Image: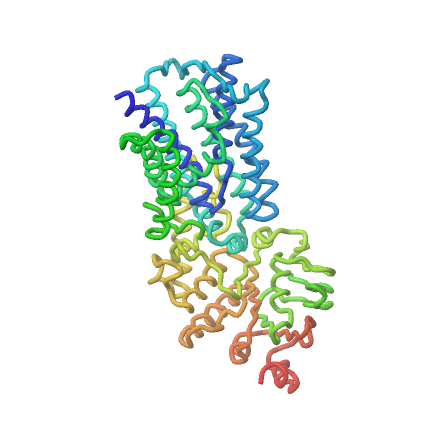
Length: 290
Length: 247
């Protein structure tokens, strides 16, 4: 039972991450390679503020989100003013830089040793200690992300995002400041990823840089594509599939060393197969990349 | 008042516009004609803020358009259509027109998240957009996907977006080119009704009959220069214009 709850918590955390990325990729058509970096910014900020300064969970979440939003705005402001393609390159660069900082700024992040002994969070008198409590917390954050993204996409703001996704020129010709929309949406996306990072750090009580690599960013993009870009339930389906897949491989008697390779092959095969059979993903409204 | 003063623009040494001087009326229909490469689209691009002139300037009211982004020019009240027929294909006809509505409350992120005052504004916008689509004759296509209606209807949709924007100046790039003959009349009627509302409609057009029927003023361009400006009967009656650009 404990194992099932653990899987469900991971699914909830990854659903938040995939939802945050889908707002950017699926709705706005901006491909970000730095979602794992924002995830890491949230995780490290919460972990360090908690272990070093004894700050509360909510303070850590707020600080992590603020830092992620600031970083994302900076990168988007620099890259999107020039050309949209540079956004992918700039986020890729941010991802590499963020990993280097997590891994090498030992005085602060403790480098490859990671940050350990993160205390259980207390949220307005609620001590989150048992796995069931963490499941409620992670699912609650995922639900907030879902509601937030649903409200945004159902509003005239969301209508502009979909227009930007398809034709930035036409959207500007309708009097819309598309740069402003892109900056705001990349900030929201980064903030949600950071919130997921905070929950992740508190849940595992230990974080190290290996969780926040470019591979993780690619995994999150895969979740969005698999579940279906621009679909509200797509991130949940994509996250559930790609979290459960490696666990399922364990049950078919494959060693963990082989499982890692097989997992990568299966990811690739699943994505290629899906793009051939259903380019919109399982629940998506748009073909990825259109 | 829309003014173009000494506008010049070159692309890799090729002159697209040379000392173009134009003073547009406050309202009416102005047709811009000329052969391919005459500079008509470059003129539109500068008038809508999409390109900067090398020298000279375009002003609308007191504003120098070269200092504004295209969305700021649109907000001043200058709407445009594109020759390659731009609109949002994967959404409904209604959503395209809703997108064009100016100053929407729900386009603020804060209001979008907290839903403050959006519902009423959205209802009003939907009513207005529906009325506009009825005006242009697309009332039966409101829920259709924009890429699933006919080419002529898509042209009407782009005009509906211009109307929905409440712009006072409409720059229309070949609004009837390539449409079914049956669609020409509704588009022409719409342009005349816009003129009757006091708007300035500037259109790039090659169809001589359309120009004769609609235009109050004709501008003829060639090789980046304005070679004739005047009433349609005056300009289109000149043998050299007819010979060079029409026949």
